[in-house]
Each structure stands twice: as C-alpha cells, then as structure tokens.
Image (cartoon, rainbow, N blue to C red; front, side):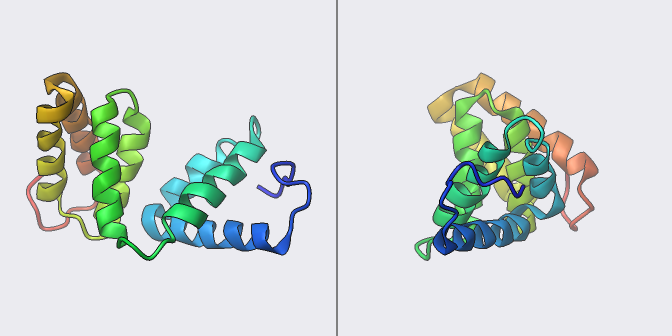
Length: 142
C-alpha cells in the first residue's frame, strides 16, 4: 500500500488524504476493510490507495453526516444495486460497527424492495444473514 503511482507527486496533501482515509476505514470497517484493500495490493496497488483516499479520506471524512447515517445510505445503495454482495457484506458489518442495529439493517434492506425490487432486497437479506451469522451477538435477534 505504499505505491504512489496514483499521484506521482505524492504531495503532503495526498499523504494526509491517505492517512485520514485509512483511519476512517479502520473506524468503520475495522480489519475487514483493511483486508479488502490489502487484497488489491498485488493486482492494483494504485486502486487500493484510491479506495482509501477518495471514499474514506474525502467523502466519509466530511462533516455533513455521521458514520451511522453514511453506512445506512451505503447499505441502501449497495442493496439497490443488486450486484455488489461482497461490498454489501463489508458495509453491513461496518454499519453494525458504527451503531446501526440488526433490526435497522433489515428495515433498510426491506425498504429497498419498494425502489429496487424484491430480488435486490432478497439478495440483501441473504447478505445480512451471512454477516449476522459470523458477527458477535449484539443482544439482538438475528
């Protein structure tokens, strides 16, 4: 993750974006998010850096929404897309990490049936079931 071809100048501003993004990624997704980014290091290290800098360093770090609200929005968007199950699972876990309850995750996914259709919602519920099965119990029904 030290490749700097994404920005050959590698200015201190870019390093700040990267450091801010890495900290935010760890805050939201813990080691799971870091593992996803590290899995890109051998095939696309520049893309791995961009995943840290742009979404997490620039967008997630903005003051307009808290992390809980951002993760609810991401779970809704990925569910509606219907073709991003691996990313949806990471962000369901991230939502749980920042205080979204299992019940809220399920409700957000069910809401997407209205806008994205039943197949997308069913796929989202399947992803949630898989995350809940390995997530430490949080005092909520799975």
